[in-house]
Length: 124
Image 1 (cartoon, rainbow, N blue to C red):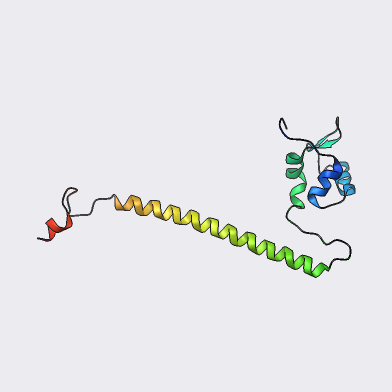
Image 2: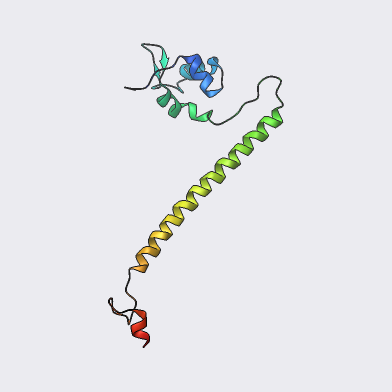
């Protein structure tokens, strides 16, 4: 909390795209405990996100008048893109691991060939 700026309940609610009443209720029911500083009556976002905010992050909610199906379809599209990005990161990590394994294998000696011998010397 040393370099983190506490937020008012309304500002924190806006970051999660929920109502201030939902934040008040979360504090009252004990869903946000350490993430609320009662002395200054402010939310500590990093702690509150771990206790409660993670439930609401990354979800686009329909506003009044918006087509709910389109909003939920967009959520699914965002989730698919996030999953694809995660898979690509895993694949990159696996490729790096495979590259390091291949590099290690290339340094192993080949049976029947001395370290200083070249292939052309052994062929003749």
